[in-house]
Image 1 (cartoon, one colour):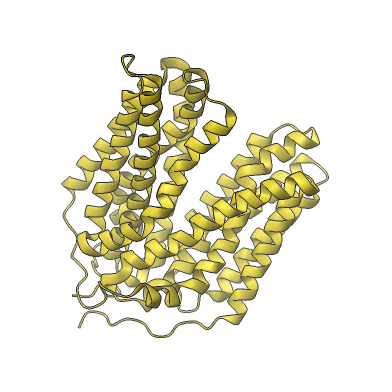
Image 2: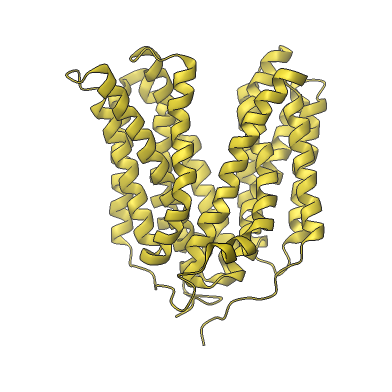
Length: 401
């Protein structure tokens, strides 16, 4: 059975998805809690240098990228609920590995190996949680509200990660890393309990589960490319905004980074009801121009207030690109291949964010700390050009009869 415009007429987008959002949020909270505390632990307890810390922390991103295709196939085979459960389990195992690294009888090499294993498990868990949660949400509300569902799931992801990083700092400062590990284990376990308590959604049937990757890429590449061009701004701001403030002798770099998050959340709260539309291109162009405007304000900012305002606008513009650009992808593939499509679509974001951060570092070293924001502004404008060139797909998949 295909999911249609309204798989469950009794599910409201926000209210019906709240348990799913809480389950995903529990895993992202755990990820954020460990993310903020682990670098300090690596430095103080294991005497790791900055290069080694960067390598260990980056292992998660590599594992996430590599897990995306498998996460998509798993979502097609097991459904979004089962995939989310596996992701939460991997997240709990990651924190368990961190806690085992604290056992004093282990050699330093074994302790660091446990940390690396934990980072790999967290990367796998992230890929499974994001893809599984997205597929489950779309299955619950139906294709007519798929954009809103993806938007609310994304809000749960970013909110969980943001709150988790702040919570991790507090727990680390007052109770130590061992308590951080316990919290990071308990949160996804609670999310698993919540997920198991929810009824299993209908499985998407019909052809498409074995859809070839060549066909999936053909349906995805232009929309994924645009998402990647938008993600360059996210990479530049998250990696170099605080450094830019410090280089200019300004205070409040953390607040400016928070302004990006505030813009992101506000846009999701206000704009989620408007993303489900037949032609997403005009709205994508509009919000990417807002992102470009914000990035240009940072690039040319005469003072910290202007840069913070630019960061806020960039967050507003970047926020809705993912749910808007995911819609045409989902409309071109059968429901039974939705997981693979979302997994492939997410790869574009992961790769662009990683490359964007690296290019920002190279460019900042050559042309100064404001140059990454000029590069990101041009990338956002290029995304608008892609939207003018590409056709809107009109080959929607069949719905329930």
